[in-house]
View 1 (cartoon, rainbow, N blue to C red):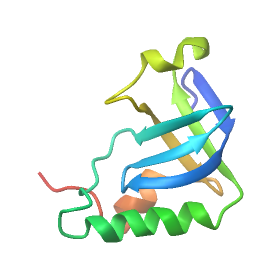
View 2 (cartoon, helix red, strand yellow):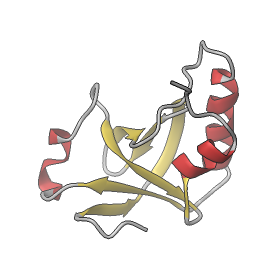
View 3 (cartoon, helix red, strand yellow):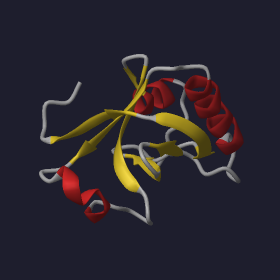
Length: 109
């Protein structure tokens, strides 16, 4: 996993917003936007399939971790994108963005 400064924390998966944004709970709810990947939107071709894939992968795991890159974990909301924290999600030790790439859900330029 990442060695850069940041916060790695177990979370409760709540729901999938779309293929690259999920809602998790730490002590409150946060939307986490996967960094370094752009997934097709729900209304685009394969977008609903991507969303359902994320729901399936996260919904059946009790081992979900979020990594939030930051030099100051006390100010998490300073690293937001459209009111979402940008970070990495790991499910059973695998990076969710890589799982999505492997399934071909990444947006093409």
